[in-house]
Image 1 (cartoon, rainbow, N blue to C red):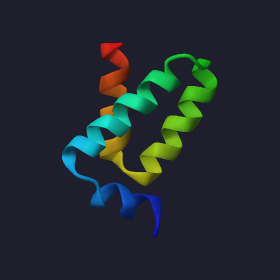
Image 2 (image 1 turned 30 degrees about the vertical axis):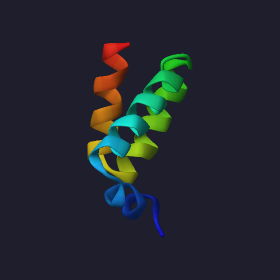
Image 3 (image 1 turned 180 degrees about the vertical axis):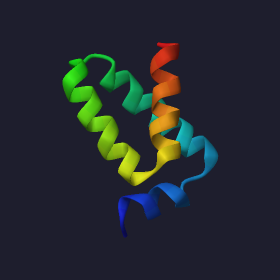
Image 4 (image 1 turned 120 degrees about the vertical axis):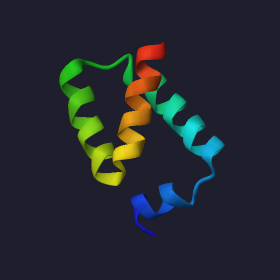
Amino acid sequence: MQPGEFYEKLTQIEKEHLAENLASDLNVISDDIRKIVLGYFDQVSTDLKTSIGTKMKEH
């Protein structure tokens, strides 16, 4: 199963928890690395990248 397929099979609450967990980790790394990692998540799902970005702003 590809990462995008896995993400699409998650429930809405699982998607929210995933985004929250990833956002908290990404908030403590350098901007350069964060941009690269967010690019990878964008390849998995634009929705996932957007959710992570939203959660990062909340922290």
